[in-house]
Length: 229
Image (cartoon, rainbow, N blue to C red):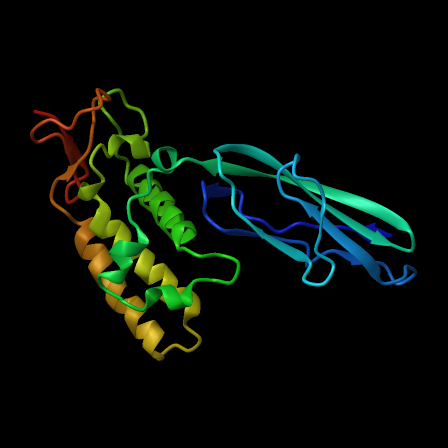
């Protein structure tokens, strides 16, 4: 039996490098070794042979949802596996922090980008999701009683520092290999800064959904209060 498999990022940004990996594909013991591995990154480019590396690094020039196909051949037979990638425009992604923000604190941070990527946009996206989950979990709602979305941050400067330090903490936690190593120490330091910025007294947000943050409109993170005056 042939079992093709794809590892991929489900959501990425336009023109951001990503890795489409078939490395976890396998065959059962009664099959000959895999002789051919091919990946079609978007349903239109066609199958690209990647037998040697068993992965394809790619970037998408336009937003949309793309079907990715991995085809594995062994003993003259083939099997395919498909998955999808959602590609967002910069505006739709609306990330709260950037790699440039990270470099202000860690000039050499880009040295730690994972293989198959050329940015930390995946980490910024994870940080954003964690921030929005924190706001939801703390019970903040807009004036209609709805859960806030990232669109409520009309001006991302309101949340940039929180997102930056959260992203730095995630990066150094990810590369730390010992409890007391230098990366662990950095992760702890950025965790402290993350919490400090999270406790901003009034976090400017659009709480009434009109697309504008009026004076004193936002959430009071210290008292779990939604303010609109």
